[in-house]
Image (cartoon, rainbow, N blue to C red; front, top):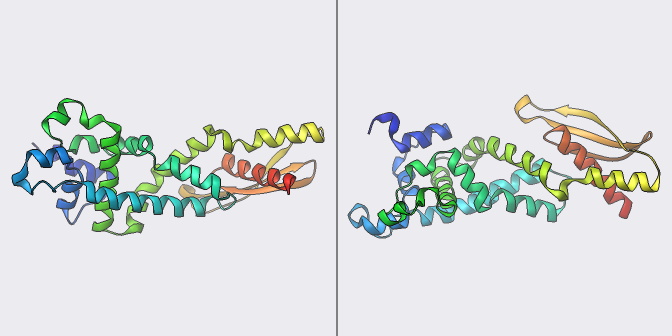
Length: 235
């Protein structure tokens, strides 16, 4: 195998991070089925489940803290649903594919023959284990600096598709039924660097501001403004 084909190097390149303890990364990519078939390499317990346990907790915290900061207008319920979407098996399996973890995943022969390197559960477990290894090799800020851009793109896609986030449609229906006026939106502020800009939007009925919200793009800021307007209706 050439240096460029080394799966550990590929994963580190995708993460833009060089592990000081490369063995941690190797362990994170070792499935229990491999350990059971290669007892001489470290014993039956030389697999990624302990790192998976740690990485699961690290991801839960990082995603929760990020959502709390990014969406100050959202109450607990929507934040909980968003976090669950961000750390579910299918989401983490896709991140695992994007990081090419399947190419480096060490599986037992039977697991490999049955397509184990593409199974969402295996990919999710590997991703969590790699996050655990990444945290042990660095710190929380370093881990999140590499993962945040991917999760930001994912959250924007989720907010565009998720029905609970479509507050604009709900507020427009209410406004037209109750007042006969179509809401208008305006962006009143945009702060931060281009890669992490935060927008503030207002929703108006005629000239009266009915709600204001903040988000990482104009669409989510407008949705946040509409949600605040809807909350004010029922207060």
